[in-house]
Image (tube, rainbow, N blue to C red):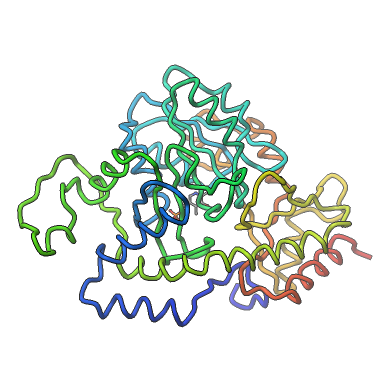
Length: 384
Ligand SMILES: *Cc1c(COP(=O)(O)O)cnc(C)c1O
């Protein structure tokens, strides 16, 4: 893919980002310390969450939240089938059972009715995923969850900066996991965070993040610290480094700008492809202010003279790199082996997947590049 003229994604790393990392490396403290503490405070302030725990991935944030809630063997956690496998894997890593449910055709987000139907006496939590940056129907999901005493853990790997009915993502669910993976809307290379208003959850996650130790390294080595510590529980090793947190703080300062640039790209795609009869474009929910992590178009395979797979191949031949989000979880070997899932079980997710193409979108993408992708799509979809 190295010869792709228009990449699917390109990270936006500035000289300020590089300076921030270098400063952290020169500071004498490179793992979790003052930069992690500051990033946590800045994330809480940005999202309106009471507490933020910075960790080394979104996967870790999801896993730690479930573990801190004591979710384990015999428990069920409801997960949409149209997501990245991390969302369901963490349930299995707790020894609990992931229960897959279908999504909505309009936005590929979890269908609240499917969620409600899947609830049993064993259900303990639900993990809605904000697909592509569009917030889930949280009012419906939270109402159902409250009725059944379930925790709501939002997988907001795509949606940092989104507003759900005017409220920032991170301040709505019982806990919200963010991703700072290389391709996400802000990055620390690898990294993530858990946001919550519950101080007990945040404290327990902090302890489980670092082996179950009752004090973190920074606390032990600063003035007034002591060498003595206790292991309260068998924890994990999921802390974020100060090197990564320094990058995260620098990126967070520009997140709004990144998201505005992504808005520009998305708006240009929407205007440019508006009349393309063989594509379904993303629908816009006016109640929310979504960020664009993924710009997914869907090929109408029934009527299009060129099917989805062929469109992707022909775009690649023109130097345009695309991706597909997501391969539904029940298509994967490990899931088919684990559960009784088979193709046909989740018709909406399967239908979306059949046509899905994620087009290039990144802050530095130029208008000319967007226009080139649109022109290529039109030519490919209307062969002479
Ligand atoms: C990227 C992603 C994750 C995992 O994020 P990491 O930071 O790589 O662990 C989880 N869920 C979804 C929906 C994602 O896209």
